[in-house]
Image 1 (cartoon, protein in one colour):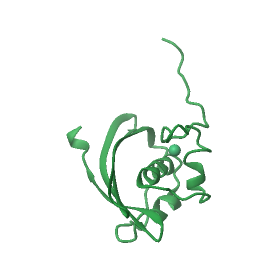
Image 2 (tube, protein in one colour):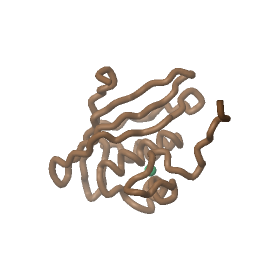
Image 3 (cartoon, protein in one colour):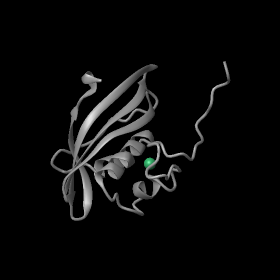
Image 4 (cartoon, protein in one colour):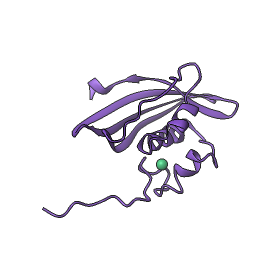
Length: 139
Ligand SMILES: [Zn+2]
């Protein structure tokens, strides 16, 4: 067995978008508010990166007020995110987009796959996560 390979710390947790694989070029400017997510896939990717970084503030801010929880229980000591795969990006109209994805994670040492079909809405030029259908059982 070769020794464990460690992921370079500056790669974006979301896996990169349109050839931009470094965190500073991909999700970081969106998480910091420097840039806004130009579409639902970018928002979804940045939210995944926010989960990896336990950035509750960003997650709540990008959640549509109609479905936003009051708080999130992010316990990064129990949960380790392993990777994101975006399967489908679907544009319904200018203000409504959908993304289906699989996120892999380990919880308490066990590996899980979370698959979701998520809905996003654009209001005042800003994309929000609305809700999603959990497809995890169909994987
Ligand atoms: Zn990213």
